[in-house]
Length: 117
Image (cartoon, rainbow, N blue to C red; front, side):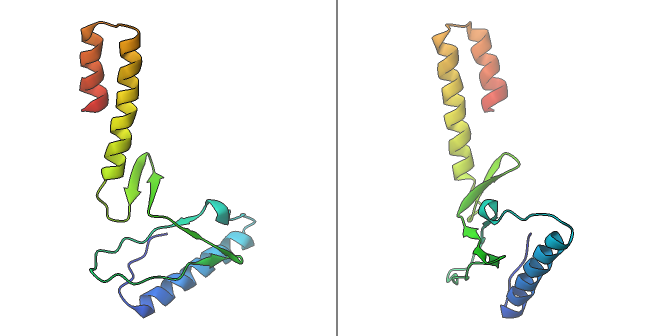
């Protein structure tokens, strides 16, 4: 669920949307797994406000500062540094694997051309 919270009224509307979604899930025999549900707030203001955690079915939703969505690690500042670090670490591990088997330099070139770039 995505919401733009510009004032208290929009926050109240967001909370009511969460309640409506939760009740819709239970009315349609869908179990909402709150332990796997995450909440992340992206706030570019200098003085960010603390938002109380959302409660679904009596369980609080975990607030996270980053999470992986469709293979991309999103963080609350939208800087993508955590994603770039993870991709770099993964490519270094694969490059180390290629070096162990002493493959040709052509394979190393293709690895860098397609995996890293």
